Amino acid sequence: MKNRKAFTIIVFVLLSSLLLVACSGGEDEGNASGNSKTVKFMHLWPEGSSAQHYKVVNQIIEDFETENEGIDIEVEVLSNEQYKEKIKVQSTSNELPDVGMTWAAGYMEPFVDGDMFASLDDILEDDNLSEDFVAGTTEAFSIDDTAYGLPLELNISSIYYNKAIFDEYGLEEPTTLDEFNQVIDTLKENGVNPVALGNRDAWTGSMWYMYLANRLGGEEDVLTNAIDRTGSFEDPALLQAAEELQGLVNNDTFVSGFNGLADQEAKSMFMESQAAMYLIATWDLPNYTTNEDVPQEFRDSVGYFPFPQVDGSGDFNSYVGGPGVGLFVSENSEVKEEAKAFVSYFVKEWGERAVTEVGIIPATKIDGEALDLPGLYVEVLDDLNNASNITLYADVQMSASAAQVHLDMIQALFGGEITPEEFVQTHEETLANE
Image 1 (tube, rainbow, N blue to C red):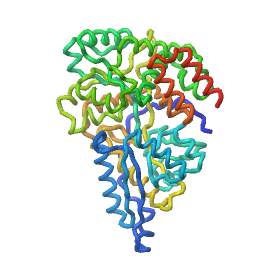
Image 2 (image 1 turned 90 degrees about the vertical axis):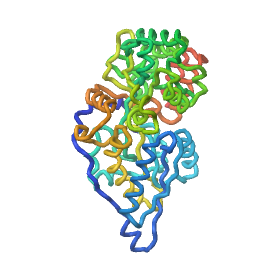
Image 3 (image 1 turned 60 degrees about the horizontal axis):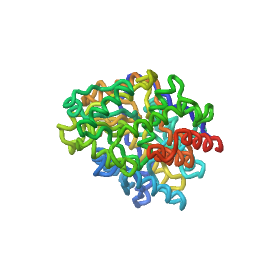
Image 4 (image 1 turned 180 degrees about the vertical axis):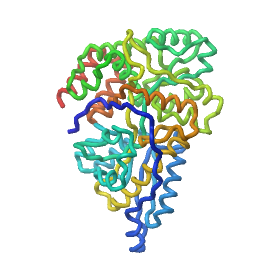
């Protein structure tokens, strides 16, 4: 079992741009036989909600097929939650796509334990890819020192806000939880929804809890310690974080009906200026920078601030985040070499295009100074350069069964169905029993 610990990254100036290399392990083989080989690829960036991702993925696929005439890529695209459900079903019948997307650490462990994901060490070694990744990102997709996924994203979560709404009511970016609550009160007095939250997906609410725990824990990453069992979920900071979270709920911080809303619905509320704030990760940066389907007036009105300090505690340079999705190759794929060739090609092409065309932060190194980037993007890069710690999302750190308990408890805590004491006790019992 992989030793889970806080995923800590100090991201220095990003030094190198991507090598543009076309790799095709299966091209000659396909041409020699005179038959085209098909690689089934499933991803979670639909055209509607992830327009720039979708566009660039299709461009990479088109380029790959042009340079590798013996290989065709068959694509299936699902939304985030639909993707998770389908992968779960496919895994039970051993019918995973040849190439798909996975999350790191605890999420991928059952797939690795079930011999469903192929080792990608050969890609890192033979294609000289290991040096292209930001330090620590491939380790998050490794178990027992073997890489079973290659990361595509590097994310940190922040509170994004509508500057036009803040300016209208004379509000400033809060730095403490007390100041944050004052902002909430002013917005409510003026009939404005303070925070968009779609907690039906639960990981969204988990980010709020994680940040409260992060700030209250001080220099200690108490949440990660509780998960990897070097600490306990009964740590006072974890109990207080649950109490503070219910305090936010009781203060009507979040939009009405948040536990029944999907994240996509909450996102729409924020982007349609129906709520003033929205806590989300940098995978949403395209909507505030490069996505031309989003009105320029809205993109210009978006700012962000780090999660506030709580009771005077918390390092603004300590973030909740980590690598986003990565690519896996099915161990049982009948076109494994072709699938690995596609994965190698994809991660090389994705890096710079992810920055210039999508507007997200890739897991591969880029030369940010050489690129013309939106101001908001440059600010996020500066944050990463100064990050003291990035703690991996709790549900990703945990095993699949423990993660489900965590998400269920998050919903129950937000819904007032359990007390903070019951919240920490259930977590402690679940983790201890593992």
